[in-house]
Image (cartoon, rainbow, N blue to C red):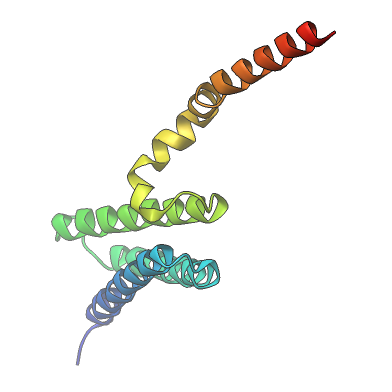
Length: 140
């Protein structure tokens, strides 16, 4: 009969598989621009990540400090990677014009969005204003 720790490890493996499937489905939903499915999948992914965190804590409490440090590191790295993806997906949901294919660029958009976006559109607007003002001045 499996121990509590073995059961938790098996359940955690199952959760990881479910999370990986949700990540794939989220990327497909993003490609299809299906925001309703995208949002529902994000909510389910959040639930599964919360369960994974609980399982990680329970497994850690049943693990000796000297035993399997590689497993602990792997679990933390996996959880971190999933949490980063989840944040990117949520950010994409808030900015529907940015697709998941641009997810690697999201951080640059988020960190420099004000300066980068302002620097792009401003010159044409300034030129239009100058042209509009100069035409208004010449017309008066």
